[in-house]
Image: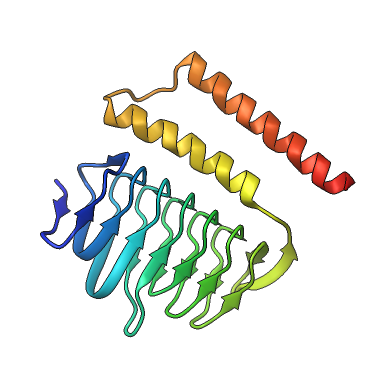
Length: 193
């Protein structure tokens, strides 16, 4: 059984799983989704989850000692991620098991690799590829297409779960395939330009 505290603001999210534990000042924007066993705690400051962003299973999100946790639009915060008092720009993908600490800022269209450890107050510019312990920028690329694709898949899954369906339909799978093909085509065009 989950918990949605009295200070939590749900602004028409796509889906909030019944096991989610949301405490304190938390705002879930339109179209965002919160999956199974997510824990969010904002005893001070606030946590904001942007439009169409997804917070996947077992993610742990809290505020920092002096900083809120702000997650932009169209982000994927994947399984077992820990976020504490950081800012995640629009269209970012945070890989499985990554940790991002107080005061860190991840620029829009960035990817943080799985199991990366982003130290306190680290700042990464937009379009960064971030990996390692401690995390460092290892490359640069506009990752918005990949992240939008991932976010779109989770948007469809969220709508399905909210309607009681646990599997994609053939039409949804075709839509996902078409989105992936369009993303690949766009990446090839960018490389050739």
